[in-house]
Image (cartoon, rainbow, N blue to C red):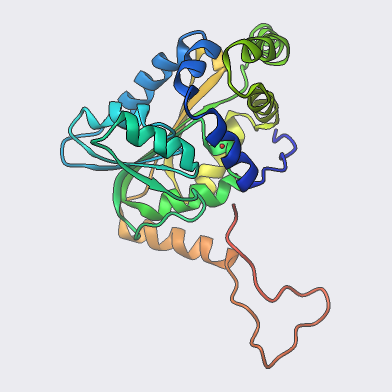
Length: 272
């Protein structure tokens, strides 16, 4: 069941990541008890990048995951909306291409990438379904998406233990190891507010992805979601037709809209 959506102001969230960029990777390793490396390995394997493929890594942060994907010989574009994260990433990984941009408005042509991935970033976006629709748009037919995100453990014991860690242990650790402990208060709140695995699966199918599936990592603390953009032209056309009604054109300026009638709509829109 979906939780209440947090009021995520892009400028404030971006600024928060600017502040923690320098020590971000070290803090993540400590806060995750070393599991971040295991989650990264699982994500890279799920992407299955091949030499010559073009991969978009959204919310790439300092480029740690991007560098791991690139080792397979793929061309990786590391995208983030935090200038501080990108500056740190460029310092650490001089061979990677970094782009500063919003996940809801990807600055790429349709069908530009063989694979798109985002790790621990989707829940920080103000409108996650818009970001998912953008991932679908920039994927080539037959391309794949891999989303690694904090989730909700399915078993009561694991769920209780995880809640205790995020609410009571994490803030204490953050005060010791982080340059901005308040940022990790946000982290705990955003994890709790994020919907479960089934809701994200529905969102992915809703924007057109097929063969959608997920598997839990670390008892469901993290979930790895996967999907594909259909390769069949007929299916792509049906999907485009199904999604098109969500984007109604504005009413002509010469015809005043009646009260309560929207004159335009925008595409649906949802960071670590």
